[in-house]
Length: 396
Image (cartoon, rainbow, N blue to C red; front, top):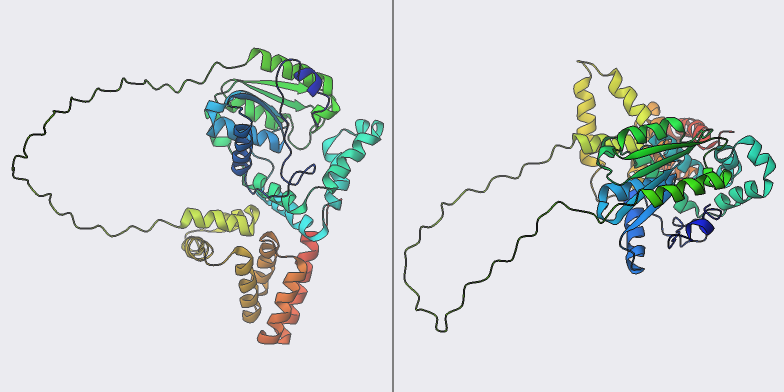
């Protein structure tokens, strides 16, 4: 992606590029959060002896740049965010993409990549580059792609942008429909020392579509905005000299001591599980569903919503004894046994989000047919089949 920028950048700086896990032939070790990707990058830079650096990243790479600026400001001298957003769409969109890849592989995503990444005129005029984009996605490790979707689903730094201290260039294509000028302006409004550059005639992969403009902007930014070594604002105090040790220690002098008052142990206070339960409930069921449930709650049903969030999700679903895939299998079986078809539809979607494939859901329902009864399983198959069709059919 940065091939056209590297020749000019290497005239001024040592340049290091990296691939995301499972992308471009990199080892397929999935990382499910932007924080983990950032930690891996810093470990690699440490191994190369790189301490302080300027950073440019596009899309998910830009999210890593924001994470660097927020969590490791002492390492970052200057920052360029290309086609980046403080929040990428909605969590539901990215988890849905993971469901599609888990079911259909990467081919549907690969075939639609040029429409998301390039303007129509560029894609038509540059078939070789368009094909490169398709093959790049198609050859990515599916597990790593799904993990990247999970990382973007959980990424939201909008409340923290004011803490980004590095001089920042926010660069976006004028025709970007993924993370466009509106998202770029959100970054500029939130980051104290940020400048905006909108490149005309470019979509999401603006370094590929308008390489000369991006190169000029990066060279200018990194040449003029490089920070001096990071100042922590702390004053180092001189070390106090220790008193001289006498040659012969004096004999101990007996003295009375007042025993401390025994303080009775306080019972441990259990943490409130509502917030963690709400987070898990959103991750499993989706923001749209949870927002709808909470919006409809009132004085009569509000306590029930709080009970479900705090105890079902904050207590049970958050227990470490079983993973979410296993909990989905158990939940589906219980719902079949109880004949709760509306909840079965909801939790079939949740099971797909939690990593079950349609074939695995089928096996759960077949098992339920033996132990819960054929009529119950027949109804469950009808509901689950419809949900699976809706959730796993790629959008054109």
